[in-house]
Image (cartoon, rainbow, N blue to C red; front, side, top):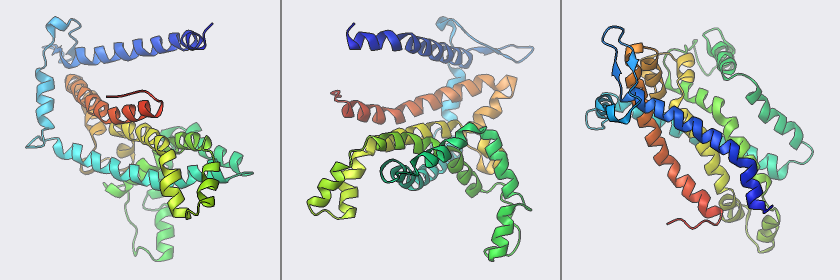
Length: 297
């Protein structure tokens, strides 16, 4: 059998299964957003037939995110700022770790990989709850900062502080950035570094002109894996802040989803978020296609 046909035979069923469930789930979301409400129970009534779709709710949600006076625009902007800061921190912290583990580490590579994978084996909720204990008024964070003289009194880190939410996002998602970047750097041919040194390039020039361009796809892959789920993350903000002053888009969607009468609004907000994230994903898909030799116009 031809290798390409063999690959299709092996991966085809899984891809069909995945596509089917993604399609069904997306169709159900559209049907709820474009459906109606039961006049008595006020529960959503999905419109399964496209002929009965009504996009009034979607239009209202779209106008609420209008940058020129939309009530939820400030919340969307706050989400983008939080994610931009968190992603930048993930890159600045995660890149050296991934690079050292993949390229420089020898005997310690195994233990380092174990340390990177261990957080993924623990429930995200438990990891965030651990930070609730650390950041509480009587927790270790306040104790250490008081001992070092950095703060003069206990700080309530869990009372609607943006820095706490951002640090929680970084801590929660950085392993998902490091691992795909490590996988990319693990295939890195170190002979390029030797060639650059032989040609007289400095360490900085070698990094900027050789290492960074060759690892660009890994950085993009890690950024996509981290940034896209952050837009829908409501759990981190709920545990580490729980106030409206730090609410994100995921918090808004979840609050409507918890109310039966607001589930159509929640579905419409989720559709808008999917559309926005798809636009963000397109540059990565184009870059990935070019890296694989596919001509993209």
